Picture 1: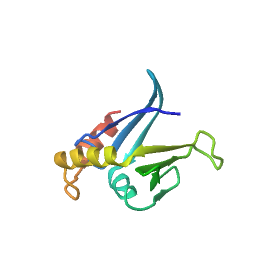
Picture 2 (picture 1 turned 90 degrees about the vertical axis):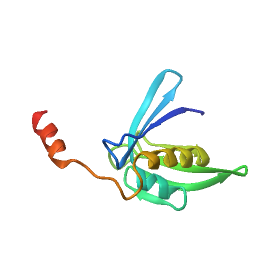
Picture 3 (picture 1 turned 180 degrees about the vertical axis):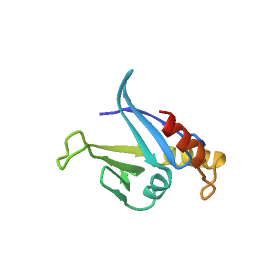
Length: 118
């Protein structure tokens, strides 16, 4: 079944990509992905546990296969999605224009202050 997805990158959280999946106006799920893992998944299988990525080709179109697994040992709440590889590569290219690969850094003092305040 076709879904809409919105991917967001924020330099304040430079290692993560936020993805929101929609069915029309309804939010089905929100996930945070490791940006480097997402990029590597375009070239080779990566990931274990709750998220894995791997390249996939269907009907001559390059895709990114995303396997999402819910909590627990069963596949409860799991899904397999196929994303257009070209769109993901373009998104990642735009994210690297904000924060290049290897240039990520976190302000640990700020992060700790936010954690202790909340």
